[in-house]
Every structure is written in C-alpha cells, then in structure tokens.
Length: 88
Image (cartoon, rainbow, N blue to C red; front, side, top):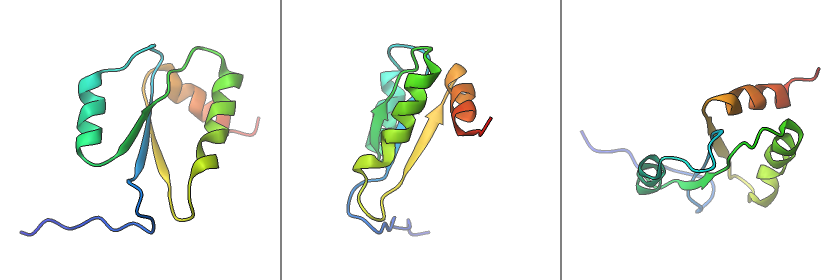
C-alpha cells in the first residue's frame, strides 16, 4: 500500500511541543519526532503554573496562517496544562 503524503496549508513542518517536569527529556524520543518530520521543541515545567500558563499562551504567537501545533505532556505538566485551560 503506498504511503500517504502529508499535506499542510503551510510549507513549515508540523510543530510538536514536548513538556515534562524534568529539566531534560529523553533525547531519543525527541530525535524520533524530528526524524518523522516534526519541528520538535522541549518545554520543561519548573513548577510555576503561572509562568507555564504564560508560555503556553505565547506558543501560537510565531505561527503562520494555517500552521498548528500539538503538545505532548507527561507527569505534572498534563495537570498544569488542564488547569491552564480551565476557566476557574
């Protein structure tokens, strides 16, 4: 079966932000994402929810029309991400 080609509204590679509580993340996983054609960024969570929320809010600022991104979170970052999106 032929492999389907990805089509995007933009010529930029799809962006993936990986986030975890650790200062560093598994370089092999990040390398696999890059090898698959993703523009991969690691964003550590330092425990400061407000600073993390502010960083998340700024992520789309440098996107071009038609570009999007995905966030992969582990550990406490998933909780912080959910809290940052809820209107409490």
